[in-house]
Amino acid sequence: MKRTDTKKIKVGNVFIGGQDRVVIQSMTNTKTKDVEASIKQIKELEKAGCEIIRCAVLDMEDAKALKKIKEGIKIPLVADIHFNPDFALEALRSGVDKIRLNPGNIEDETKIHQIIDLAKAKKVPLRIGINAGSLNKKYTHSIDAMIESAKDHLKILAKYDFDDICLSFKSSDALETIAVYEKASTIFPYPLHLGVTEAGGLLDSAIKSSFALGKLLDEGIGDTIRISISDDPVKEVIVAKKLLKTIGLFKDTPTLIACPTCGRIQYDMLPIVKEMEEYLNTLNKDVKVAIMGCPVNGPQEAKRADIGIAGGKDKALLFKKGEIIKTIDQKDAVRILKEEIAKL
Ligand code: SF4
Image (cartoon, rainbow, N blue to C red; front, side, top):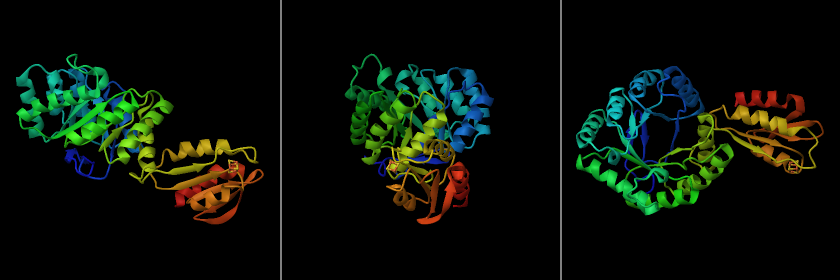
């Protein structure tokens, strides 16, 4: 099922599914019970463009802390819970907007019933998260096993007439990720939360996630994404935005066009690219910036950008909306580019 046809669920004030829009998520790596640190990190993520945030709940203190965290943030809050139904009940009482929980991992049926009743009363959806690395022992590891596992969890929810559901099927292998989500999209009507899990550091994760999620998203599969990176979660949001923009599913983030440089370069371009890249990563603005090395490809690319420079000897030509504005010194390039971007 394509993202435009999946069931639409509501997480706080954000819709997932049933639309051609992909929601960006991330997860805190602070201790959830450290409310101050968690709120601080979530605010940074909000500023970067994160639309939904998830916090791990390891004990009752974490579950209770969600109430204060919720009060201190703007975006919807998701509680990530494994095994313990009492944490889920407490998280719901704390006012979370979604729960990640696999009902098949809870043995006590009465508790499952209580969780579902409370989730229904509070209109809180639930994500069933199947991870290749933590499949129940009764399944032999395979794509079919991940699908079967989801079906088993769904059966429990169906018994209590609950269908406010989102699904994920994560693997650390990009090809397996593609295969399982492609299959899931032909079986389930629920929105799909995409991610390559345990994808590694920034470079590895950006490559694996862009390949797997890019392919799926381009096929119309996937309603929300989380890029998993072993680093500051703000980077997850930046990569997610860049990926979505590259495939035309997101607008409000800058595009940087920069040449790799070669022997023709006659100004010190790479530090300008580095500083501008860091700056652009902080903006939520649909702007195209070109930083080019020399007159071979420079002027054409710079002309096609909203703002751009094409290098000469220790200097560069400044272009704005296709017109040459002036010649600038390389030492002024970053300042002038920032000033011009602010005016756009
Ligand atoms: S734009 Fe000029 S400096 Fe940059 S890679 Fe192309 S030829 Fe080399």
